[in-house]
Each structure stands twice: as C-alpha cells, then as structure tokens.
Image (tube, rainbow, N blue to C red; front, side, top):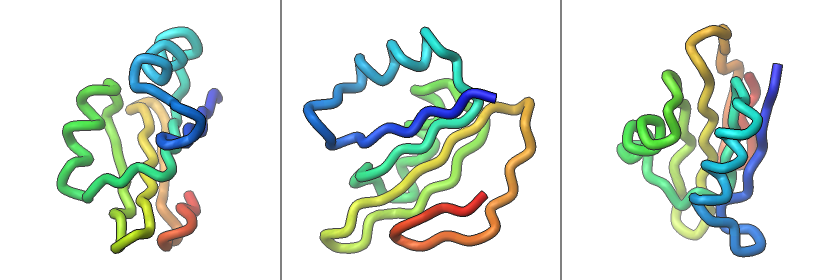
Length: 88
C-alpha cells in the first residue's frame, strides 16, 4: 500500500507538484493537512485528484483543515477525528 502525506501550505507546495507525485507514485491513500478547505469543497478536490473516497475535517476559524482521500480498492473506516487528526 502506498500512502502520501502532503502539507498543502508547506514550503511553497503547489498543486502541480502534488499531481506529479500522485501520477508518479500512484498512492492508494493521500492525507492533506493545512488545507484551508471547507467540507463542501471536498468533492471538487476529490474529483480533481481522481480519488473515489474522501473525508474532510473542515477548517475552524484560524485552524486549518485535514483531508484524507483513498481509492476504491481499499476499505477505510474512520475511527475518530478532530481538528488535529484523522484516525482510520
């Protein structure tokens, strides 16, 4: 199983860089942190990155959000989550 963790706002990360990593390594799970994304935006991101499943912890004021995406061929169960973690 391949998993990628990506800090969206870290060290000038770009969508192009992320897409390159996804195309090169083809992970089954990707974890995005510091997304600044609202839960209603998750379907747009899921479609853009070409994943079938998505779970988002939306931003809360100045706290940035978390998103986990995974492919159809694995089963993921979300055990717990907060503004700081997703346990799956």
